[in-house]
Image 1 (tube, rainbow, N blue to C red):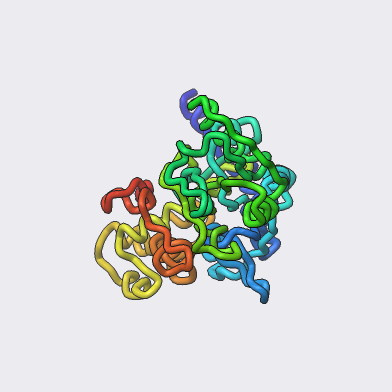
Image 2: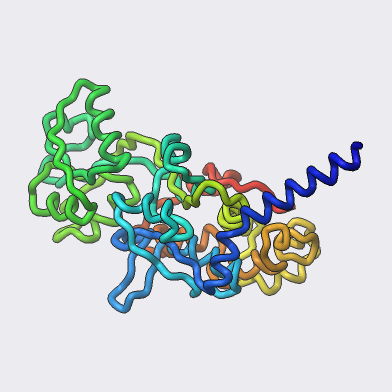
Length: 336
């Protein structure tokens, strides 16, 4: 009787695995990953004049393509606004959403999304003109603030002022592009969005040096890629791609030394590069899935540096996004 139950249990597991493997199969059959990204935010998702996309979220998608195909260029980027991003994922227009999106309880449950992890720990802030002579967000009582509607940013703005019995004139816009243009034109005293976005948007202003980002961070904004509910295998592929990039930095595996690392005798590195164990196969990928991620895209530190950190125009300090053993909170479960 126990054997019968065991066989039935295995049958259920295999049936569930088969049913949940559709997105990975669809992507493989298509030969291309469809990635929903921003399209207007420097450092996270932005195409240049030649149509080449760059950004932290963009590299998250390229890493998934590298893990699946061994080719980081097999990605079609779909620019999505804040308003239509969730519908595009729910409808299947895109395979995943990597668009500087905050992980919240309602999005994780009522919208039918699964966030795979955090690729950027952020928080909301404010930008003002230096001529306003304001040094703190606490001095913004009575100010007009430009903000994008339909975002956690708009909700946090209301909470911040309400909790402190302060007044604000909220001026909302359908897109971030409209909001920052209105601020630059002088229609608002301040502009608010995620701090990373403030540094990116400041570059677009007519005179960037005339503006400062205030020191207060008024919210927690854990940003990360999301997939649809109901496909555990795809959830695992996207989640472990991010984990691989973080683990690679901790193991000092980079795009420059990855070939050398495939010869390592270190057990952690052997599991990572696929010379020990079958961790790639467990994901429905090849043994060299993690090698391809690092070879074609780089580890988390490399990706952070070139898109938003010291190697970028934004020059954002790693801060909380440093590894857990370097003073930050960025951390990934082990491959084993």
